[in-house]
Length: 179
Image (cartoon, rainbow, N blue to C red; front, side, top):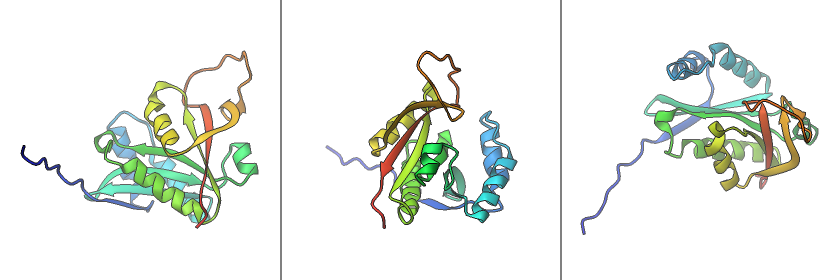
């Protein structure tokens, strides 16, 4: 039987968000029909400069592939009260999915967080658009924080009627080995 050879994937570079990124990232998502304005990434740059957020950008062959942010001061009170930073806004362009880019972004973010904290938080939406993220986070060892779900960071109580959209979240945590 002949040996099977798979093409090597292009190496992925992960770096901090820089001044040249907002327009590139925004236009990459706009082509796909997603509204992610450059102002969002300029805000991330300002927050990164102040130390309240870290934004990691993945490129492959000098093409933008994805990003995530680490919010060092999250709005979710249980994380904020426990000083648990939250990984937020993980996005990999469809053309670059299934290549391990999200995993590499998460590895890098968790490594940076472990230098400062013993735990990390992440929140995930509950509608089907988040199916892959839900599975990825569980496989990486994230577990629900035990407080139920929130809608716009307010606890959803039994019997409440809410809209199933991007604001309905389950919050997860993972213990890290501090570096």
